[in-house]
Length: 380
Image 1 (cartoon, one colour):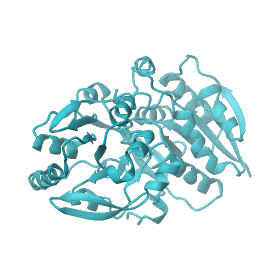
Image 2 (cartoon, rainbow, N blue to C red):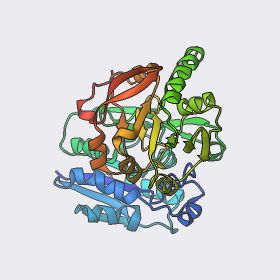
Image 3 (cartoon, rainbow, N blue to C red):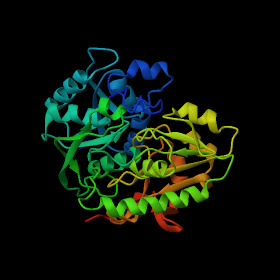
């Protein structure tokens, strides 16, 4: 029996990430002018490759909202409509979701970020199960696969008729204007029905636990002291985004863009809030290293809010020059789940998998698994 999938792609999802715009809402033209390259369809193809040999029919809007991608993946495809505007808009996403609902699809697959998840929520609520293929800059909602291929594997499980439970997962989004100003203001919008597959579907980003701040501050100082000791003259240090790295920069007495990526050399910030291309240029002929941390609750170190740290940059640096930083509290909160990478290059993601050292304090490193969700412990 043919499994019917409704497919919706937000072609502009994630467009602003690589050029340091912290999102794509209302800045698509600016992102394209800065050299951003749309990647949503490519990420969708990675997911659909997992179901290429299965009995499936894809229903989608014409062109880059879904039909082109499904046809490129070699899947039986039926076009049900087209976008009213070019590029497509949130209204087109909502219209497509509502039309696909009338076709009685078994599963709605969508490609985007938290804004796209919000559009789906407003259009269909919990009337049909969904699986999100991550392509946005900021992905705080728990409705996405941890990578495009992981999303594809969940879809394949459903097509094969494997016993997969459904659960309600939160749709969360942040105000991008506040985000670009360095303030994270997340909001709960509702819940979508998502296949329960712990090793493949990401968690929502957890808030810090009350009462943990003072202890965390001391640990962060220890981490910062260790990093300061590691820093050598003449090396360019890429300081990733997030509050943990911000605490390190504060300890070093350096200005920090918090939600962006900065470059430090000889105790000075030589570039702040840089783009992916700027990072490649700054490090191409210069010894460089990278300090990154993970997203609390999710475990991603690449591919969530830091698309400036591109796959070409990681290859250029070499894995030996990448330092992962996290408190033990953050690691314990993962409940055995591995750290995750979603660089956009599946081969690189596989190369990075394994036990990696994580800086957790002053001269305090632990080995922790990175990648390969199939080998991860399942969170209960």
